[in-house]
Length: 99
Image (cartoon, rainbow, N blue to C red; front, side, top):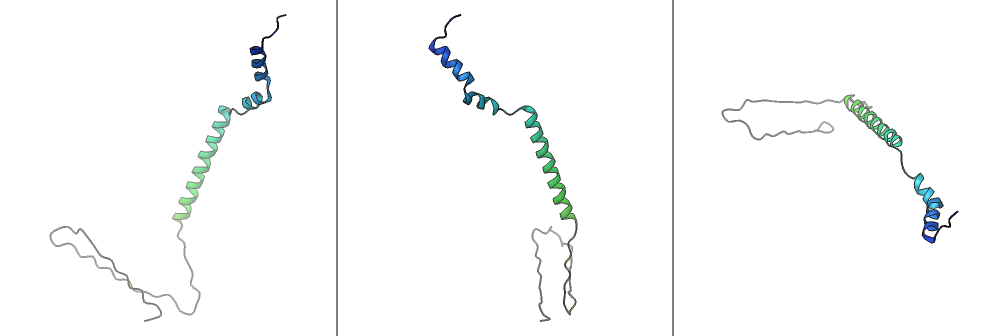
């Protein structure tokens, strides 16, 4: 049986040291990465679906009080005379409290 020299002893100690065993356990397997990837995609799709559902459902607000909401809307569309319209204007006048 031959004796190990100092370099071989140091190498042998590094291979069996707690640090080396700890480093070997920190590797993530391909299966774990695949599971995390699938989980991420599922959560992303579910989140997108939930947001799309909430945006497509109209939300109404009921007003409590003695008066019923009233309003007048007027919209006039006039075809352009000659050249195409390159700008436009929209105005909104809100009257509060019957002013």
